[in-house]
Length: 343
Ligand SMILES: [Zn+2]
Figure (cartoon, rainbow, N blue to C red):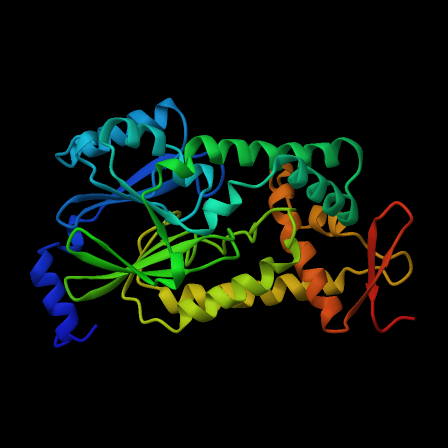
């Protein structure tokens, strides 16, 4: 960032926040890269961005980290949430109970958490069947969707949210003396938002699960709910939106704080192309191939399968929409894809 940038200079003078005053709090999770990060900064009121993993141990970790930084959990005045995944909203109840902060969450979460569980189950059942899941696997997918809805409602009760980010088309939020641009960034999760601001003249992005340095985030979007095939185009729009921004430093939810904004976006674009091309190359011209078969080929760890399935479904929809694959549906409702070149 140009040092002469008057907006950057003014803002950093106004708030007096230094880039080194952004505290990173890491919580253990048992999936790669083994941690999730939340961030603490003074705006000058104490502000927490995301709230770590769920569970007692993570709660203790949060309190310890605040203590080390010279604060008490009760001092948290603002809590911003990038998206309602368990490793980002895990300690929201504890923070609310102890500190009663102003809570900011993406507006889409309000409707999503109002989702009727029976309708969700029916939709997931249909999409899981279409993807080629049967029996216990399909039941598992349905159970996972229902559990996820229940857990999100418990961890981030809509009644506890004070400010809905992005409501009525707004694209910024003022927290203390700091103004954050709020950027809709779906794909990893449908309601995901990033928060961009200026600190010490640097444009910084509180990125949640975008622009991760170690790897592309999984396109979970809305899981196997209605609109599952939208995860790929949604994430492409996110990459375009973030790629148009000049960001000096990213504070992501996983992996290190970094200055590789464009590099991570370019890598994610390449990764999406590889996903689509990889799926295209694996279609069986004779028998056709299901999303579940393709997703299974793409994971080493069985736990990963459920998270990879929506992005494969979405890649297949892209291939069909661009006349590269043909879909046929069996009597049981299973969708099989063949290369479009083969009649
Ligand atoms: Zn996430």
